[in-house]
Picture 1 (cartoon, rainbow, N blue to C red):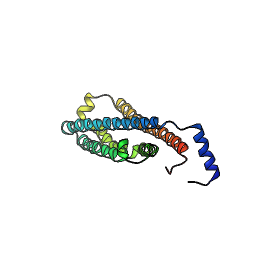
Picture 2: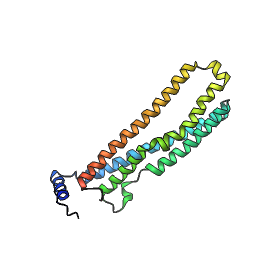
Picture 3: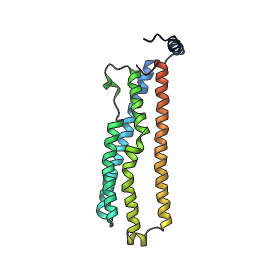
Picture 4: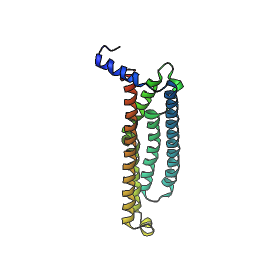
Length: 195
């Protein structure tokens, strides 16, 4: 218990304003858990599809850069979901035992926020070397050069991919800021981080 009169007055003002009912907090925690579990499942399935697709590419595309790039993408599609599971797997509220609901929800929000803030380094970046090699392989293959789109279209596609990666990183940062606001709300309601 804090004996700081300012902190105590602030906590009492929060109590006067009223915290949401515990049942609503539990429902929010369950909803958050389901949303994270669904997101992760979609990511795992997407990575499995990438593995299958680039395995086919590795054996069918003609240039050695295609093959090496495809192998690197496959490795990234194994590494990224492992990191996703390690950093941002969903923890069911009923698995928390005696932890208070606010503490559980805050802990999960902080965990997801931290994962989203660093998503470029552990999820996006591992795919880039392989994708660049596959793209370069297209430029070195004479058959693809003869039948494929002009070089300016390929560079436009490449620029579009770079913009898409930037958009994904921006979306994740936006999500991290949203989760930080929820953490701040919980801290305001509970009087601090030490729940």
